[in-house]
Amino acid sequence: MPSRKFADGEVVMGRWPGSVLYYEVQVTSYDDVAHLYTVKYKDGTELALKESDIRSQSSFKHRKSQSSSSSPSRRSSSRSRSRSRSPGRPAKGRRRSASQSREPKEDKKKPSQETSIALPKPSENNTKRYNGEPESTEKNATSCIILEQKLKPDLEIKRVLEQYSLRSRKDDKKKEEIYSEKKTFVAVKPIEKVSTKTKEMEFGGRIGTFMLMLVLPATVFYLLLMCKQDDPSLLNLPPLPALESLWDWRVFGVILLWFFLQAAFYLLPIGKVVEGLPLASGRRLQYRINGFYAFILTAAAIGALLYFEFELHDLYDELVQFAVAAAAFALALSVYLYVRSLRAPEEELAPGGNSGYFIYDFFTGHELNPRIGSFDLKYFCELRPGLIGWVVINLAMLLAEMKIHNLSVPSLSMILVNSFQLLYVVDALWNEEAVLTTMDITHDGFGFMLAFGDLVWVPFVYSLQAFYLVGHPTTISWPVAAAITVLNCIGYYIFRSANSQKNNFRRNPADPKLANLKFIPTATGKGLLVTGWWGFVRHPNYLGDIIMALAWSLPCGFNHILPYFYVIYFICLLVHREARDEHHCKQKYGLAWERYCQRVPYRIFPYIY
Image 1 (cartoon, helix red, strand yellow):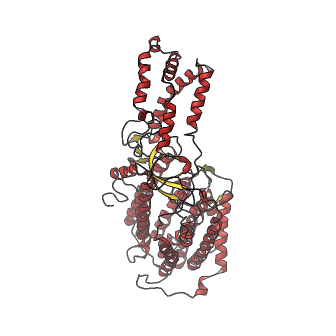
Image 2 (cartoon, rainbow, N blue to C red):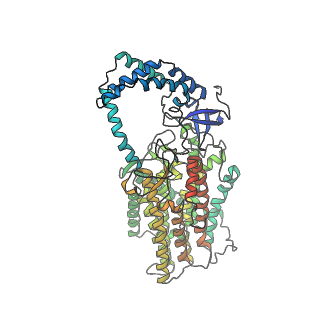
């Protein structure tokens, strides 16, 4: 075991990842397993650095003192010769003996000014002086283009000076030796961040995650059994069915067939291949974007089954059995994911699922991006089996309503629910690339939480309104239907425009279409939007989601609260996710996030929360 070099609380100089700049930091902790120091910058940003990226303050001063011990006259003569080489400099610029003789004296009197080149002050997450830019709290998306244009003339002058250099080879050799000496001190090494142990556990820790593993499946079965009752009141508990009636191997075979059919569609060489966001190691994974094509192929397959008179409406009577089979498959998949994660390299583990406790890591996901070759399991399950399965279940409920109630056309309520939710699913598949920037992909591991959520919760809970309408038909008028449609359109517009604005800005902040947007720059190189939808509330996409969820429940009427479970659950989910986002962003962006919160005070609901 290597000995620890720096102690907790010690003030040292830490290299900012991806740069040659060293900042004053304070050591807060040390990971004996990963051999990483957790350091805190002056702006509050906390990062994990290797020992090779940390230097003592005395080493900086010592290095500078060595360089300053060279002859002042040699440095002054070197400066005079370098000025004389400029072809565009006037002749009088060659005579600066007085100023040159003063320069080394000033250097001796103020040695601390020399170190300011290697020791710049942190810029408080770049909201003040950011790499020499004017002091401001906002920037336009076009600022990086203007800065690049300003740097071009300086680079051209430097190239000309090097080309017409009259310096002797001896001086060049000495300069190379001095440069190589400095380079050994601030050499840029590849960033190899290693996933450290999870320090802060969410969802109530080990006990909370264990309870959720029991409560979530029980909630799904309770909701489905309630919808089958004539009186689905909360106090009217449904009778428990016989255990043997809940399991059918034929149904489990259909679940397997559905999963592997969608996997086959995913592997088809159609659709573009894009790169995801950089991982902690700097590597980018590739993803094939063909979810919408998979949806079209699935629709064609379902249409062919209906053409040959396949009774899809029977799904209504066996929906509980399908939910049990899907839950069993999700559990088996979670076990496989955890077992394979035990052999995964440390840098491939999820930052939030590496606590060392079996139950917690099993629930949250131990490995960040489990893959079988190029087949990304988490990315595949995020949209394909559950989301497309949700549409198929809704269609089956529509056909069941027509058959049970002898209708020639579906009810208006059923049409609204199917149409609204179909639009939501098609939008997600059409904008599939946007999911690569979500927390599920970039932060959360793939464990029971996402496996059960994607394969069981989404298709069987999100289709609750359609399932409810089969046994409890609700009649609504055309004006009411029109009002509900307008509400859903408003929610969809907020949801889609906010997400598109965020995704486009993340992909290309210099896009001319985003030139009107203002943002707060951060020390990570990313910006926090303070105009547009993201200057209205901090999570406008959540606001649009909740409005749409309400519109999906309103066609079910107000006789029972059961069909409103989705909107109630969704508000709780998004409020909890918003709290996770707040905590994550505060750690990531530091002071810049605090200024963003001051600029945008409302989180989800304007003037309320």
